[in-house]
Image (cartoon, rainbow, N blue to C red; front, side, top):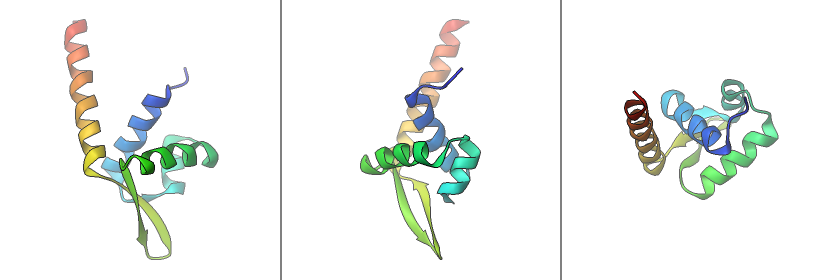
Length: 87
């Protein structure tokens, strides 16, 4: 089943939190997204200061901001509460 946009955003943020800073190609490979789709997601995340782009030598890499870290924390806590409630 295809993930929702929200699930895609959260997954990208989690990937960057765990593996960042990484470049767009690496994110695309990990998330199994084509470049155009990933570009749309990254533009949204950048515009909302959830991730930021940094120069790393000859390539640009992406990292999670403090806002992105707070979002991940919130979703992890909410997910844990939902799982506890379902038991």
